[in-house]
Image (cartoon, rainbow, N blue to C red):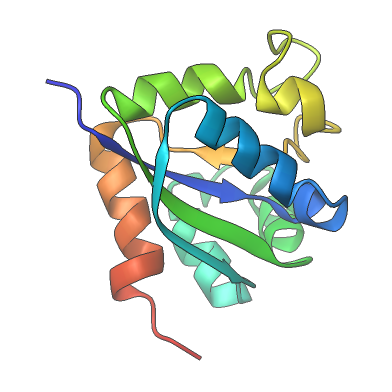
Length: 139
């Protein structure tokens, strides 16, 4: 059974380019309810921990550098079938392949600077949401 919560992060490129409001509007228009939200900056340690699943991948260092390059907005979203519906809303990782009207088609500038993160499973949505809103030490 699909869960009703997912996690998203508006990434540094979208924050820097002034797209927070437009992205949040798209999220609301799609029927999601924001149940937790925080604007913050990831430390190197936090970025490495959040993306630990990619630690052995060749792009890991660049990913950590990018994710620590500026502020992000982390949020937990609620809606029936949240993970799948949000993945549809954000579009393909590569904005050139993303469907028209999706967040990445509208606001991403590249595969790496793809505007938003969206959890890929109910399990990861819980883990990622807890990383930001329950387990991460406050600075």
